[in-house]
Amino acid sequence: MSTVLITGGAGFIGSHVAERFLAEGWGVHVVDNFVTGKRENVPAGAEVHALDIRDPAAAALVASLTPTAIVHLAAQMDVRKSVAEPVFDAGTNILGSLALLEAVRHHSPATRFVFSSTGGVLYGDHTVPPNVETFTKDPESPYAIAKLSVELYLAYYARVHGLDTVALRFGNVYGPRQDPHGEAGVVAIFCGRLLDGQALTIFGDGLQTRDYVYVTDVADATWRAATRALPARALLDSRAFNIGTGIGTPVLRLAEVLHVAAKRELDIEYAPHRPGEQQESFVDISKAARLLDWRPQVDLDEGLARSYAAFAARHDARRRSPRTA
Ligand SMILES: NC(=O)c1ccc[n+]([C@@H]2O[C@H](COP(=O)([O-])OP(=O)(O)OC[C@H]3O[C@@H](n4cnc5c(N)ncnc54)[C@H](O)[C@@H]3O)[C@@H](O)[C@H]2O)c1
Image 1 (cartoon, rainbow, N blue to C red):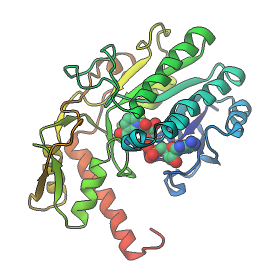
Image 2 (cartoon, rainbow, N blue to C red; image 1 turned 90 degrees about the vertical axis):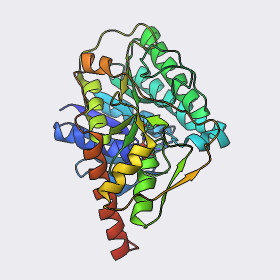
Image 3 (cartoon, rainbow, N blue to C red; image 1 turned 180 degrees about the vertical axis):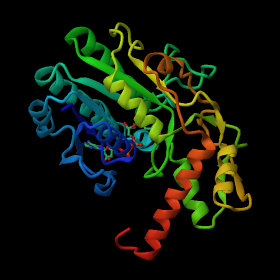
Image 4 (cartoon, protein in one colour; image 1 turned 45 degrees about the horizontal axis):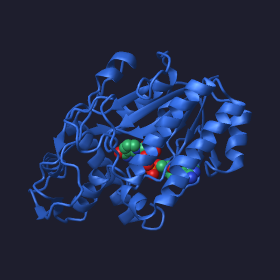
């Protein structure tokens, strides 16, 4: 049986990736230290290893499983925290990733290593979207710098040690089980405020765009990236794939669609533009379509309706049983 080790598998994206591999009949192992992940996120059938990715026991696990693929999602993924605590951020996001790559090099060199990078903040603010994989990278936060650093290591390990590495540059991923603190927390934040009967706050004019991609589409792309034959890695970008929708959605439109899902009158408060916030960010996805045979299947209206329904169900469960939900 093929096996996958998913780091961060108790998190938002990781739990959906675990579901996808289980549905394909794979053996699924999850490594997570539960700093933000939750046990109840992990689907039945996956084996959980409560470990930090930097713990030597995680390397030993790689050695004993020699998995077909590793999907590396575990990360400190709060951009603001990376600005406040860059050393902590690099410890998890760079050194943690390196520890796994070293384990693969020494103990499981045939494993396909799929890394969760970012298409949202890697290219910076000086390109004209849609951003293509080969565009100049200009990361503006320690979080984004760490992602680019790991991508450089992936290219190094492929070139020098022959490892089979892939980078997926996710857009703003949203959907059920999303945490409000992450890179694309706005959907979770908006759903929470609508459920509490509060107005939605928009910074600036609301016309700033992001590429919102539904989480099951991301899980599908991840499964394809872990399993398909791919061209050999040559340069930094040759095994990197943007995973988004190719559409830049203004945050104002996001708010409008969520009001429809919540069956509420539009109630928006405007606050001053936040300095440093990117104005336009969306990615070109033609490479993933061509080489992974992947296209997103869930459009924004459908994805936001499903997300709102999932947040509403959790909200109701919490109200009925505040200690367990
Ligand atoms: N959500 C997005 O829109 C988005 C966009 C681009 C990239 N990404 C990347 O995708 C990955 C998953 O993001 P997510 O949104 O599911 O976040 P998440 O916080 O829900 O998941 C991260 C998981 O990693 C675990 N973790 C953190 N540090 C760890 C450590 N040292 N050892 C073991 N486990 C650890 C957490 O407990 C959590 O379960 C991250 O690498 C993130 O940077 C996310």
